[in-house]
Length: 618
Image (cartoon, rainbow, N blue to C red; front, side, top):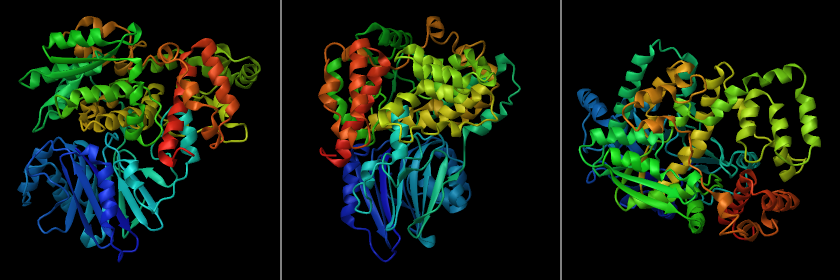
């Protein structure tokens, strides 16, 4: 696990300044406190910071092939590297180390840009090909590891985090208005955008070739859509259940490969419980598990996590998150660089800090809701599936007009939501600032919608369409971003075995009624876990990983929002209406509703993020 960075000048005769590479390395030191290195040649330079996990003595980077014509910097883990190494040795390749990194070099020698296809793992890497004066950037299938890049008139910059690219004078810092709108709607900046113009993310499941300092077009090598579209596994329920459990065991076991101890995040939900259950069977020693909880009962899952910890006799560690833990906000924002409004980043950061005191690697249950159809919102969409008839009957526009005429309140929002087409209705229900609220925030003269629905694949069945949309957007942009940045801010490697691509392909290929049946999400997963975890965990309502912000900001830290946002002057520079911010303050003070609280939190995060990017006067 590392942080990688580099620069490739379009003027091949101009060397990359060593001081630039040093600055890029310094700001990524948290991703790799165990060492680092750089390499430069003909207008190109790259480097890495290393967190040593596999081949502690011999895995230093940048790493070269036998003659040094190809070199690589790599962030992540390749879980099938031993099998790939054996195949490469059989084809005559020679290895100088026992690391997974070296496998990438020899795969590139044989397959070029297609070297990603045999890989099983999480990764973001850059391969320098001196013979062709080219660099290959690659990102794993689901977007577990991040990779930013910027194509400028002077060349291309790339790195694991935005802050690395910002060390260069090649960039000018301007807010990307599309990204700003997307953030306000959804609480994160979806791939391939970043909050700054000209800086993009290599999309999940893509490679990008850069030749002579000029970036090409990202090439897609994998997507979940194809497997959801097939839904072709002709399996009976018993056989499908056994195959799922076998796939889960294989995925978790493969993710245990490490030369340092491995622990697990344990929330008490189905996904992390399944991971811990398999770890306990496979690891041969007591698993170290880590959980966070809250004093507010409806947010607290510690009792459920303890059940699993006791059943599998784990070495269990707990942490209670309190309202005064809001003080870690600046540390969170330093990890994200971009505005990121998912408040569950707070407990994720704190549990990562706890885990790092005991282990270097943890396994997490993230990804299960997307691939096994676990979200409550999928059930809500199913219940509302006939509402599209309202549009067919010509009632959509009248409902929206009636909604606009009503005073602020739940009825107003519900009527507007019911009037929308199915995918827009789904996205509207997820939005921090739905379209009408966003219009009030930004003023009617602004474009106030980010067209996320355009990414929905119309040919899929309704459940698969929503899962596919979430895998493309929310999973990579929110869930995996949160886990990567908050764990790496604490120099901790977090692995997500439920997103092993073989398991994802199997889950997505299941018929929809094995993912959700009669409104029951994670149907087949629950079948597979029968007899393996406490039965009450299979039937209790999904709780989610929420933070009691509305309780905190109504009680012990009341006044936080007014203190942080003041008169809204900095945000006004982005075109955000001060009156809208004042109205939000008043609505939250009057109602203590969670949606108003989340919107104010998103504005605080945006304000503080811009201060970090542009200085206090921005």
